[in-house]
Length: 239
Ligand code: CA
Image (tube, rainbow, N blue to C red; front, side, top):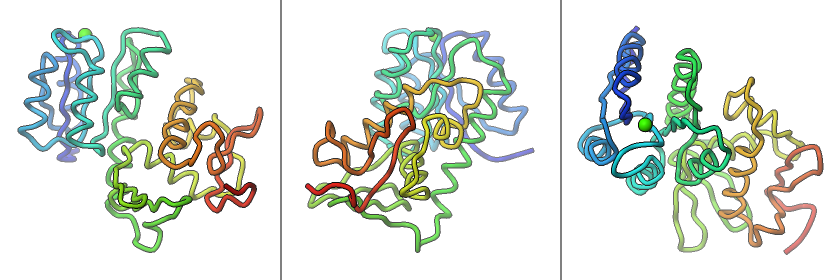
């Protein structure tokens, strides 16, 4: 199978990196390997990349800094972080620095391949988005799903791919209570690993973007012990 997708792998562990390059190429991906963060950023800048796999613990500059730099260049590039640590703080910091998803080492190759496939599929899915469903209004913000642009007054910014997919899921299930587990399964495609903090962290991001008062949400509403409810028309409460 050839799929012509180009993956940038930033990983300093040579044995792991070589095994990943071999297996990804077997899957039909084109892979560029960088041994450390600065080289990774140079390659990212110089080449057209479809997805980045980024190790957290790297010499010179760590994965957090690399992720932040990458996000200043592209908000849409799918970014998968590899972390050796099991601490939730690293994963949350990873997501905050711009990663869309993470895998904790050691991971199964099959899981990595499934994640990559999912991330690339969602990336393509935005491109084919049908125009009638392309825009949506949340409060004073207008979201264009075609390029994940958000316009609010004269401010314009872009959502990351993962933020966009989460928002899209809410839009498609407007007015229905959605559990964290459902979000993990359908937005992150995680079934085995139930870490609801990932979901909460992304909800916090959306609230920061769209809510007039993020600590008193009116669009992304928490429903105690049930999950979240998206109400873009804000029928429940008024500013
Ligand atoms: Ca490392």
